[in-house]
Image (cartoon, rainbow, N blue to C red):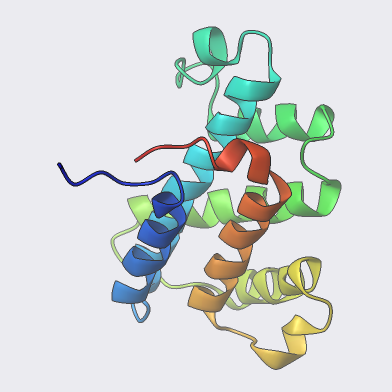
Length: 154
């Protein structure tokens, strides 16, 4: 029998990949962002009438910023999660396009405050831990949309 991956392997793949780059912020941001975009596209494909045909296939007209706004307007993302994801999107853009990348003090503050959206009081327990933040962010998107996420295949 050929090696096949179960539907649950996507989350395992994320954690394995993230663990391999835990000390490299640029890589953490870019890897986590790739999974975020995959998960958001899955939500759009399943929840929007023309999701797959017009929205997720058309990355020129429907940027991640537009997709985030759409999901927030349709109440698939609450305002706090929308703001966290939008800020993370901006951090990802810097990570992908700047020759020298590091997370700024202002960005750390936003990310640390965002931890409390995932687990109350978490900002006091693990501040400035980007790998932990990414795990909680991806875990939240996964858990809040579990019915859709289990259908994603690698």
